[in-house]
Image (tube, rainbow, N blue to C red):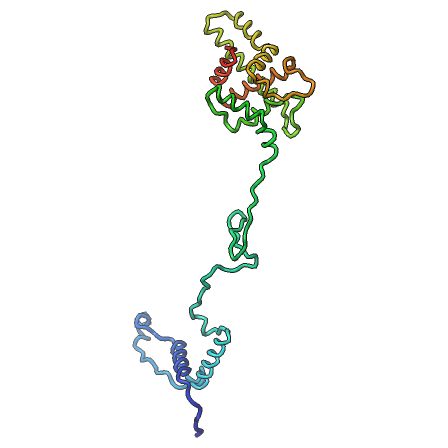
Length: 278
């Protein structure tokens, strides 16, 4: 019989014994109670030495355990140790981009990366057309007269009233047609206000028609625009006389169209009382 002078690694031996116990299935009392009656009466057989030799001798098991420990030191994970707990990194995950992508595609910037957000530029159409100086001044004056705010949805239509046909910006889609449409609606609102006023005074139909013809005359509307300073908010082509062109009367009626479409008839009546038409 050969003698063994090799020192015993008790830690490796204990780990090998523990592994053998884990690999050997253990039957609990609950599992045993579920067996059939024929098997329940059978006497359990004690494991023979052959069962141990099937998985290797204790010396081989100790050597295997030492190899597992050596591989663990080198950073190699063995299948037998896959059941061990895994520690997750406490810090934020690093990215090759150096920044974290958030909702909207913008980065909030960390890991030393500074993100510069460029402010969005206001579209030139709204700055130069919708909010031109004449449109802003006209809107402020109308709001002081009618006592109500002009809604934002009406700002573009009101701005179109400040351009005559000869200076309508090319960036406005069908600008001339839209102004004529507003003027047609405004003319109907003016007729309604004049007729109702004449009817409330007990005048005849002929009197109402006469008042309508006189008050809706283009030359008379140009004088009204000049008298109350609204002509200063209208842009004309070079060489055009504001007091004789139909563009001034069209602008007046278009303003009434904006008031009746985006406010109501009461605001139209307030404006007409301000200029002395009713």
